[in-house]
Length: 100
Image (tube, rainbow, N blue to C red; front, side, top):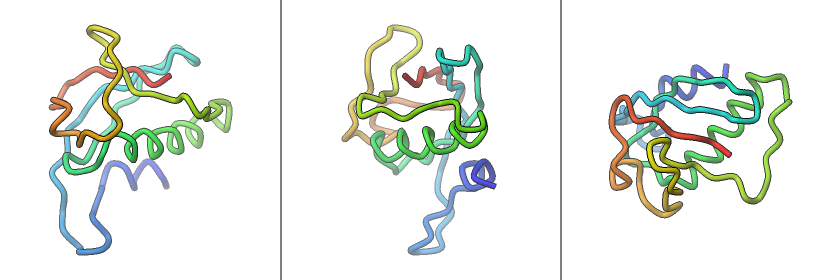
């Protein structure tokens, strides 16, 4: 049910519904694309860890987390700043990202 957790992302501390953006995540290790809702207020570092956990569960554990796991912009290959929020990183609906 982790996918549902991502698709219905609530701030559990406050019970507040969060603004989120639907993005395309490409995983080169599997050659597959995944749609995911990213909460605008979360930091890229937190979102990256959440995505790794979700992708790992969806691929039956075949995706292995590394200390160097990063999210990149698909259009230019530049890494996202781990300290930026999703909103501050310029991520909006239909943004294409790569998880390496």
